[in-house]
Length: 249
Image 1 (cartoon, rainbow, N blue to C red):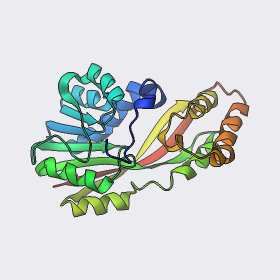
Image 2: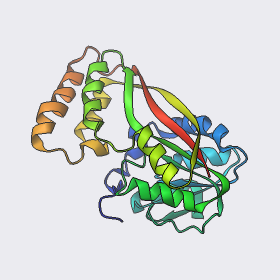
Image 3: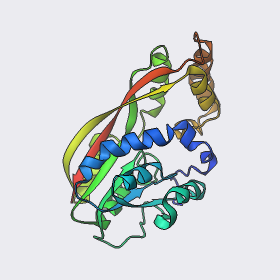
Image 4: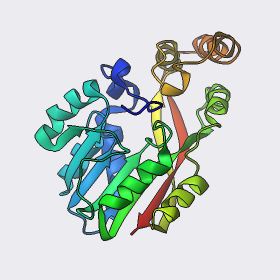
């Protein structure tokens, strides 16, 4: 693993449960599939537990996956079999110009050198191949009476490097041209009590290594506030936005 990149070994056992599981993977695959065109040989960089790759496979794509996390890949193997490999995103074990498409979903903020990862993705694409990137910190639109608590946590993500402008810059430097952009709108349901539990267990990478003061000043008040809401076990509708960028070689 390249120094500075983030492995999800520590939360592999609960990753799917805290990220929306099969339903979320299917919805994201359906959003991305039209932008893959006629691509058959597709690579997911940061395949994780394989949920999205499995969903795209059911849509007729042949998807390979790489990840640095052994524990996540053990779960991906259950879905994808031998089509996954442990590898660094900055040194993909794939020949140049051998793939029709590649995609990165919530990965670039976790790697040591996102520019190098984009360049590697460009290297393995054939001429006219496509790179799809879902990135950017989630922008909360509404979460019923959890909205203010969500926005308080959004502030902790604002230093993320994977902005749309930065990704366009990295892709252009790698010889890729942006051909499409969409703001993805994601809707799911979660109760304040469940959200508080997920936060308390530090299930999200952006709070893994927070210093004690930031935790006590920002995160703990959110946890306490969520648990104090009326009917804390009742699910609320949460809506947030992310960026989907499509590039062509």
